Image (tube, rainbow, N blue to C red; front, side):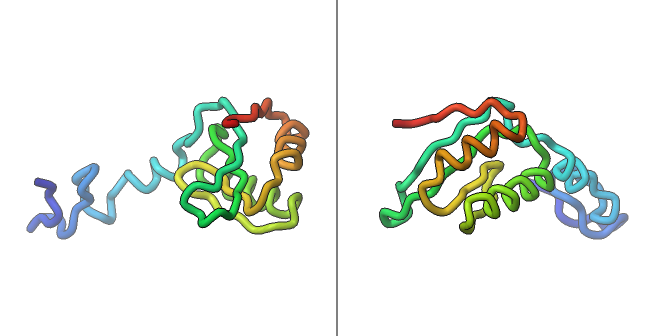
Length: 114
């Protein structure tokens, strides 16, 4: 059972068990590198009612850097997208554009999936 309140410090963080004012989890999560460095690009339609998205996995970036890269990729492809669970999802089938952008940015992307 996780400690959520202490009479000494008030509410506590369930992960680090420090007072919420002294919590280190959010700072560590903001500076944590999310990807493994092996950049893979694939097209997915599963769970999206047949609509395809281009997914970029494995970028070794922090959450802020990943959001900035997604913003630039969306502008390069002229479409929408999002960042979910350390991956970038670009709406539509833009595999070639994404691969070209990642190569120009200094990454070595590989196509994944069929």
